Image (cartoon, rainbow, N blue to C red; front, side):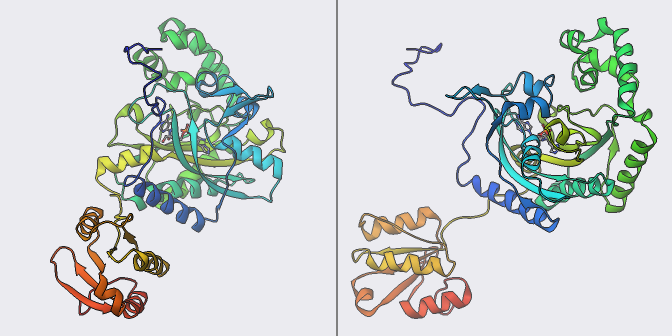
Length: 433
Ligand code: HAM
């Protein structure tokens, strides 16, 4: 069979699917650094790691995120397994965590962090993938606005810890069951009178989820949204007080924010606080580096007891693009610190690399009984600054020649002594240096 470009499919090597990408060394060292930074911050904030399955009963997302949302309607990878169960690959991390909370009823407040792939059938482009990855946190069981401040500050501190400076935080409140229904009615009648001015998509869909019009990037919808009534000005007293306490807390934490009445977010579970971090050095079509908010009704929607919650997720690829744009978070060197060159059969190399690794040193060697020349070439290519060379004379005397590969300077030392010094120093050094 041939594809549209005329290539022969059967003989062609399969490639990673559209919108996905492999994360490989050395780039993956940045992933390790990013995830370690997030894990450390989350641990300091009292979050424990949670892993949930990559696929769930599709109802977790249909009920949790909302049937009318684009993510569920157009982008979810939904399928039947071989026994006819309706399943979906997770498009995001929050609904599965809340499903797990309802299932296991841990004590509250429950604070968990995660690092997970997420799957969305999107128009693949730079910064927008069909499988992306998120780090995130969720807190269940409290509606205290101080927790909103903690969660938002954690995201902020994460970006700062990575070295990012060019990002902004937009904040909004989506109200609650008290104030939102009346507002939605008002917005509906406003949109009804402007229906003909909306873009093709929203002219037909606005009544199902009128707030989505605020999210639309098309000029026609933007103009209508500009003069639409804003929820921020119609919040009930408790929602107003909640928002005021959040903004006061962010000020106290030194986290800059800006209110944005158009920030509605793409998931329908949000109530009250919503927020988004924008990387200002990124292309505007994919400049959200993280976002989140409250979802005080989600646990009930998934069959659990009424339990408020808040969290955020941050796209690893997007954050790394922001790091690229700002020239921060370079890949840490994973090059070996020493390269063992053994031309006596490889037994010394076998034992020495393991002994060195056990005392914490990145040690490498070559295999397949190569010549001295070939092994030294490989040591150079691997980026090792030092070679530990074992020839017949060294094997006889249980010594090793330590050679500085840049200068060629070398000295011999008993293997035992070298290992003892390396264990004490945490590094291998040539004698006298
Ligand atoms: P979200 O805004 O849909 O929220 O996604 C979170 C972050 O994931 C985005 O800010 C962006 O950095 C990244 N992201 C989303 N879609 C893609 C994509 N197609 N390609 C690359 N990166 C992407 C959520 O998922 C919520 N679960 C966040 C949350 C947690 N709300 C409360 N708790």
